[in-house]
Length: 219
Ligand SMILES: C[S@@+](CC[C@H](N)C(=O)[O-])C[C@H]1O[C@@H](n2cnc3c(N)ncnc32)[C@H](O)[C@@H]1O
Image (cartoon, rainbow, N blue to C red; front, side, top):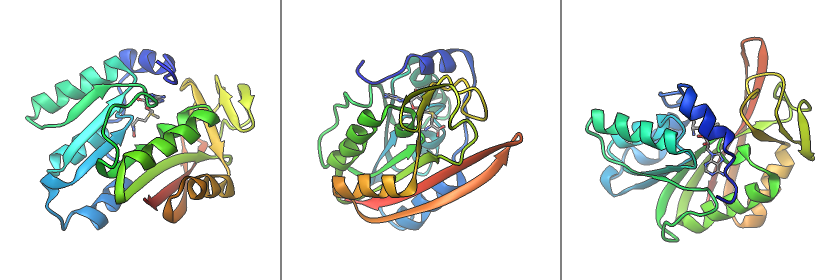
């Protein structure tokens, strides 16, 4: 695999991962897609992890797709879907080796997957989301900011990208690029995204700060 870090396979093979969707994703999907013919709306969960958003999207009746580089993660998600008689196309894939058609998806949800990579690959992954979206399709992307506990710890691979983070909620979770708002905005603009909205969400998690950028953008 090109970009996938095997640290994630170890995590998913040995730990339980979140099973329930984030309120922010629910709100975004509800505002934009609940009024539509859901079975004809193609949704991609970009890095399924424990399947929280795949499960939610399938359960809500959308035409749901997802992938993850971790075989264990994908197996668990498939089992959960089967147990609840839900349908989704879930594959083991590297985020830079996707085999969906271009202009295929109405919506792509990236909940902290792209940000778990080196900057050069992050650029390629946002370009890939753009390529895969239909014209007018929407991206929802959750990233971490430089205000998150753990930024500046571990091994600095390049500016604001760290691995083996020693503090906070990202400790033990491989690589993370901590974004600055203007950097993220200009990256998405350069790729061609329009109607870019970047909100911030900051909360305390076990005495650590988690600060995220919540991105909405359109092709
Ligand atoms: C922080 S977890 C988020 C999982 C899920 N989206 C959620 O909201 O809980 C990141 C996920 O992305 C996957 N991932 C990260 N980089 C990847 C890559 N380059 N290719 C494939 N999967 C990747 C990891 O295996 C992991 O399951």
